[in-house]
Length: 281
Image (cartoon, rainbow, N blue to C red; front, side, top):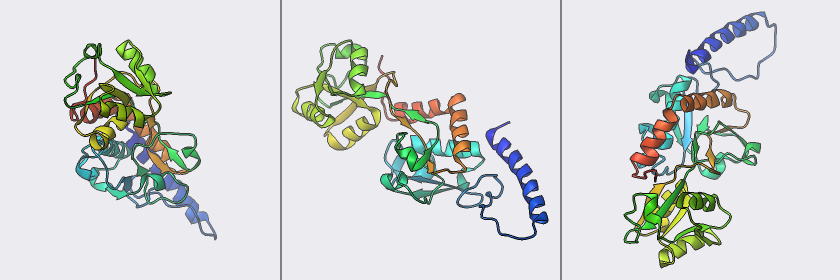
């Protein structure tokens, strides 16, 4: 039985109980919000699932700032979760929020929100999280024209100077993968400056940061590839309003997608193949 089937079956039983209670009640007004019609879940709009993303939403998380197409990793994950919950794409309503307002205390205008939110204990004081749908990997980046711009394997970095920020996960991953100590700098900003100046040939950072650096900070920036390790990686979770009735079913949906391999397929499609970021061997 699928998750959505179990939810619908449970909702039917709950509906019968609620009807009997209403008939026997003599007075008083309930303050409990009604479940959405047809899906057994308490959502902002009955029969609809409201999902938020950023304004704008960036590649490769959302393609062309159009999450409704389901193109891009987070857009695809969002619609896959919706399907697990029993919602067709046309029953998903998209809204936009800032990153900071989504994880701040207070009422929300969404049921779910996906914007590369790292799960943290501090944020859990203000919002709920699903189980993680993605754990960041480490990537290696350079600029066009560098000595390693055409590197296709780990062996191609044997004579390269590779930099990392101090006290970062990147250091241990780079050292283990490359088999040598990388050059260490005080911060990510210093590492980027070293790459721009030619002091190093490449740098290692987490994949989301690599997308940002090569798209915004570095002229002719290029992601060479990513390492086959999630050691120390940040875990991204779906944000929900604090104490949301949807937290448990959304977590169950994410877990089901992980267990059946769907999350892995989407990760390969949108964070490896379509963006030409191969896993380095």
